[in-house]
Structures are given as structure tokens and as C-alpha cells.
Image (cartoon, rainbow, N blue to C red):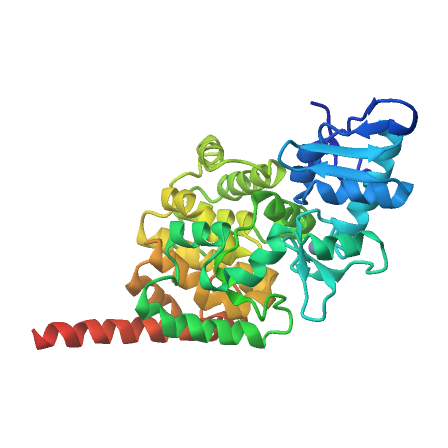
Length: 402
Ligand SMILES: [Zn+2]
């Protein structure tokens, strides 16, 4: 199947987002002549839109009747239309109803807002951008809402399949009564943030998974500036590698991941071994900074197994926390309010021990970032640190009673 870039203006053959080239078959004749699009369903899948949307869009643009039979994946536009023409029209559909209006990433959901307008909710940059409500397709979308739009409204009680899948698999903040207080606090803080687009729908924040593609895309954008912050200076007195060859290997490791952004966990481990940094605590600092973005609350769960392979010792744990400190402190200060959530996931997934986190949080350090920045990150971590201490005290009280 011929795959083409979802964004036709992007000529890069390594562009992550592909869809099948549209196929059109003219059937019948005379008044009954029609164009069947046999791969409409696959195209819809690639765009994360119901296939009837682009099909109906063709109808709107061509002034033609359309038919869709979703059960049998049959999508028809009346009249004879060639594939090239439809492909061009599809381009218009993509820029109007798929691509993020801000960053042009195609990983968006259509979300119905309270005032009955439709926005594109971007998983890559978090922006919500309006669609042109005057287009005739809008009426059709309102009548046939995308499954994702329903989900984002109904998933609050864990009703959506995707949401519960993601939640259950990681067991974060669901079903465990002791988490409620922290969860509530974290949500409150997130809600207070002006840049939290899902402020009224925070369950999504815990449950929705962000694909690797979205992270990868984001990573590319920050790539150039990131390179300079991958590795620490030589303030690391416990360094256990040769000072001269070390940084280069770490840089190479980080760059390799950035270049091959869809690397699997196993491939990343292989790369680390190739560059001789596997098992080194500094590799953790690099890893954290290249695989996570400001969506790290969701991303960490996905990479938890990978992190486990890298984080074995207390030193590794410190590097993990240090990497997070750099990421939040330098790259994504807008993530400050998510620090407790991030720490909670790391803790729940046994990636950091209580004692190590408490020690890390106890004082600002200039080891990974400026001392002022460190202070901010640790202040942001406070709700989690308090919760951890309280949970600890409760456990002690219980055991005293026995
Ligand atoms: Zn975007």
C-alpha cells in the first residue's frame, strides 16, 4: 500500500505521519455513475477520524451526494471523480479538521465544547484550536460526533475503553482510596494553571495515553536546544567513568534516540549498550531528557518498563530525579504543577524509593540545575513529599497499635 505523508506540504520521507494514498474506483454509468473509495476506512484510521467525515467532506466540496456503509467499509461519492482530485480535497479536510491549528501535528481529537463549537485538541502541544464552524461538514459532524468526542465527556467515571485501559494497566490514582487526597490536590493545582487545556476534564489527564509519535514530534522541535542540556558538567564528583570519553558517549546515546524517534524500549537499551552507557547512572539523566516532554505524566507510564532497566541503584534513582528536575526546571517550567503527579507515578512503579525521594526533596541542590530552579522544583514537589511522609506516619501508627 502506497503510504504518503498526511501533511502534503511535508516532503520529508521520514515524516512520522503517513496515510494510504487515496484509491478511487468509478462504478456504474449514466445517472448511476459513482466513485467508490475502497481505502477510505484506512485513511480515516490514519487520520483518527471516522471515515465518513472525509467522504462527506468530498460531497460538500463537490456538491455531490455521498453514501457510507461503515459496517462494510463502503464509501461512495456520486459522480465520477479521479483519485488525484479527491486526494487534493482530502488535503483541505486534513488542514481544516485534522491538523492542530497551532503546531500542525495531526494527532488531534475533535472535542465538542460547552458552547457547541468544535475544537481540535492537540496531543502534541496541548493546544485547542477552533475549526471553521461555517463549513458545511460541521453540521454533519455535530450530528455524527466522533467516538473520541463522546469519550472525552463520558470517560470521567472511567467509562471509556481507552481510558480505563490506560488507567488499569498502570493503576495510578484509580481505585486506591489513599490516593484520593493527593489526586484531588494535584487536580486542583492543575486546574489553576492557565496552560492546562483539559482543566475541566482532568481524568483525561491521568488516563489518556499519548502516542510515541506525538512525543517524538515534540522532541524534534526541541532537539536543537536540547542537545546542550543532555549531559551535566563535571561537577559530578562520584563520576565512575572516564571523564574524557564519557560525555561524548552520552551525547551520542541521546542523539541516537532523538534521531530514531520511534525506537522501542529494546532498541534504546541496545543503543545504550552500543555506546557503553548502559548501567551508568548518567545515562538515566540523558534518557529522561530525550524520551519525555511536557506530556511526561502520560509518557512515564509507557516507558516505565524501560526505566526499570536503567534504574537499578540508588544513584540511578537520584539521576532519574535529577533528569526530571532538569526537564521541568529548564525545558518545561509549565510542568511545575505536575511534579507531584510525576513523582507519584515513579513511586508507584517502584522506580524511586521513598527514602531517596524524601532525601532529594529535602533540600535544593545545584547538582542538576541552578539552585533557585532546584528550589522551585522541590517546592512544587511538596504535595507529594507531604503525602509520602503522612502515609509513612500512618503506617507507623498502625504498627504501633498492633
Ligand atoms: Zn499542536
